[in-house]
Amino acid sequence: MKLSLGPLQYFWKRADVLDFYQQAADWPVDVIYLGETVCSKRRELRLPDWLSIADNLTAAGHDVVLSSLVLVEAASELSTLRRMADNGRFGMEANDLSAVQVCLERQVPFVGGPTLNIYNHETLALLQSCGMTRFVLTMDQGETALRALREAQATLGGAFPEVEVMAWGRLPLAYSARCFTARASNLGKDECGFKCLEHPQGLALATREGESFIRLNGIQVQSEARCDLAPDLESLRQCGVDYLRLSPQPEGMAEVIERFHDALQSGCPPGRAGDCNGYWHGRPGMDWVGAAREFSGDLQETTR
Amino acid sequence: MNMELVCPAGSPAALEAALEHGADAVYVGLRNPTNARAFPGLNFTPEALAAAVSTAHARRRKLYLALNTYPTSRHIHVWKDSIDMAAAAGVDAFIIADMALLDYAARRHAGIPRHLSVQGSATTAVALRFFYERFGIARAVLPRVLSIAQVEHLCEQAPVAIEVFAFGSLCIMVEGRCQLSSHVTGQSPNCHGVCSPAEHVRWTELPGNRREVRLGQVLVDRFEPEEPASYPTLCKGRYQQDGQPFYALEEPTSLNTLELLPRLAQAGVAALKVEGRQRGPAYVTQVTRVWRGALDALKGPQPFRILPEWEAQLSHVSEGLQTTLGPYHRRWQ
Image (cartoon, rainbow over all chains, first blue to last red; front, side, top):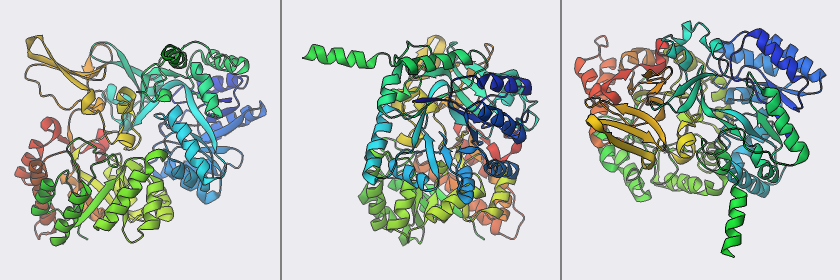
């Protein structure tokens, strides 16, 4: 199992992004996904900037993949997609069927992002036939779903693509045409004033009894709960997961990566540091399922 | 070109209402997990589906079957069997989101048109080309994310006929990409055909005739004694930033595009969809009647104008008794 650094979900100032990826050059992650996936109005960095970061990271020994926008609407967004696919050096993560088609037309192999809705082996095989070499499991699927996918795919023959699973960070739960961050300031999307820059980890919202619940990140809604699959390392390994995706955060990213890296090196799953792992266990995403294996082991012991 | 009026039916009675009041086509779902309104007591058995096809065809109208949830490998046979059964029953089109099912329907029942469901999340001509070239779709239902100008542009570029949502409950998230419900309940529109499933909803009476409603453990909203309360989908709850609760995502409201009708027609939109298979025959009657009247007026010699009674009738059956142009109107975004 290897580590990947997922695409930056938030809107940070240019200098902060450059600084972040300068540090990332030294981090023990194998793959780094780069690019804007949430909002095309975020232009602190443009494609040439991302490509230049990509060159630096490649020189530092990382595999770089360019991630595409999740919600593609405008002609300008399509043309950015085409330019990304035509870059000639780095692979693509297709987060929308527009990107899949663009890659397909150019015969560019791609990583299927978590929003492609791959829920069965036949859809998986169809996308493989379009050039998909790796896929990120949708947020809502976990161990059981992945096993079923693998077993069913074995009946078709052929190679199973590489699998990547979201292992650390706030979960992207939904996307809209509406900018929620702008709305929270009584602004429309067209005159948003780049409010996202003021919320480098998203804008936290609580329920009316004060329980933290979601984060607004432009047109994206994230979970407040940070997913943490480090304690589930063993079952991830058993399911043949190839990459653990760690989602960028403005502070403490090096420590997050170090914790996962140490766990992979030692083979010892660490204790809990995040808030949720429900999806991996076939539960509501926000749930935390702790030490399930030990418990079921004890139970069997008792029954016997 | 005439725009087709596509109305919902969750029961034979609703189907009758839609046909009686002027639907050109009616879309239904089966009583199993294959569609995105998998609610108890709703939808059609195989026998009811066969009868529904006959009823619709007797009036020279069309009957579409929505198979718009995403099957897992273990259960995909349920969706495929449903496709075979519905083909034998004589449905006029399948409304599908999942690629494997589009592929299956195209191979097994090539003569029955395939419509890409709104759950397929296709928002550009390039994405539509993918579905058209791979699976021969004849029509696509657009997610409720595009502005009217974007819809017009897409109609020019699209390789297939375009269907848009005209009226009904407003999903404000990109359809097919919303996990809010599964985050809290484990059940999602994508896989379970439900959003905020009823068995996870809990209403509690508070002192002073106030009420609160939870989905699972999450408090979605609280209501003052006279305050109208609507179904607690997470996107229409009130949350707080600095202690000030507000509708952070969207108010309880319904989509209503009556005033866009001339532009949608001009753009070449092929079909207008009314949301609401979970609603009863009274809703279907009222909404179908208004939209039939509006579409007929559009074809008439007089310039199109919205009758006040249309607005009144539609507001009456709307969520929160109010309507919006939603994402069609750039300001909403």
